[in-house]
Length: 195
Image (cartoon, rainbow, N blue to C red):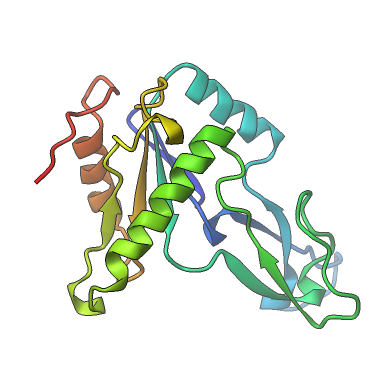
């Protein structure tokens, strides 16, 4: 799953979760059990229709939560599972048996929001780097006040970022609590609380 709605908040999972796979259909009458080689890389979220939906969501000032991932946004795929690389991705080396596909970070967002998200991800990475794995929180939440140079204060307070530290998954119940913490019931911003 690459995106979901929690109330009126659009939640987008950045990274390898944006990869869309499709099942390669077996010819009619050919018996067999589907295997991993029957799945091919189809696209990277969002497609053109989904991109228009995101733009309309943002344009209306509706809340957006982007879940960034500490894991590299690279998948290694057997060449037989890639019939055609999605638009915008660099071509693989000729004759490669395994193709490393890097998913461009936040390329679906307007530039100022992409810049703000990437700056937050760098900050979150630096913040947790010195923390032992067993003491790391599941997520680091963007403070929402990172200055106009990164898009804050420019009518973008309805866009927030969460950095998943990789220690554990973010279960749906936790994601719902994060949304409730960041956005009030009307879909606006909750007050930013600093310790």
